[in-house]
Length: 313
Image (cartoon, rainbow, N blue to C red; front, side, top):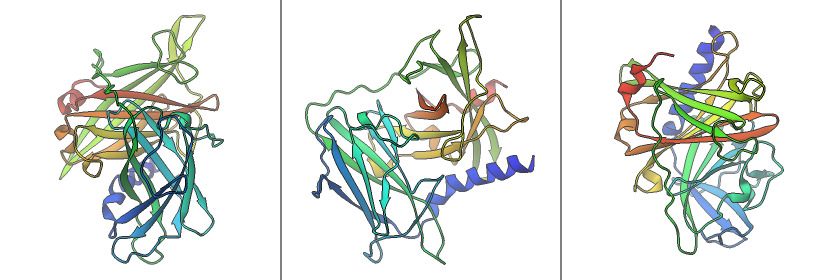
């Protein structure tokens, strides 16, 4: 039980820490060695990213790791139809991060890099880093900006998911990670639970992964999920709407499976101060690893606190 409380405490900190940063980081972006924010759709492009302190103008050169990575880089289409989770390389003590877009990565924790900016349109970028400020208050930070891919953009905003009778949002995945249907490799479900508190509510997102049992033609709980980046899973939550990337609600939460407590599902948490209900809708991606492949499940829904209270799991 103490381990569970410690894990939840870490999650609370991860939700609150980005807001505690005292100095904003200013991003400096190079695409193929040039200062620009444009990537040709589907074309391989080198991205180099560095940061300066807004208060001093000094370049940040030292960083700490977050879940075994110096940076988590999330790139999503502004209609929220696609998302990739990348891990750029920190180049020595230069403070420069490097990665390649629209090309597969060797990093086993990265999936879908080859489709980072596949089609024309605007892309929202969230860079999560942890500057090493020595004795100063340590804090992880989200740095936000946009990239453009020229051409005629098609709006492919995902339709809202509807909960089933058990208040679950359900999706299916094929073994290769592409969206599937009943009878494919994985059934992934998400349901919410609310614990009311002072100043806000703790929202628990429970994710269950089930694998298809061909002989019995039924889904059974998958108990062979693997850790990756020192966690069993990652959740990315963003508000759907027309607000700028700097005003978007964006959450990166980590999930763990606790043997003997809830070993049949993964738990993600977020301390909500009312912002979930204010969003027109939420887009949620979760990632887990099975058979050495990182899988991504996604849902879109309107947050409903009453639904979270309605069903007990």
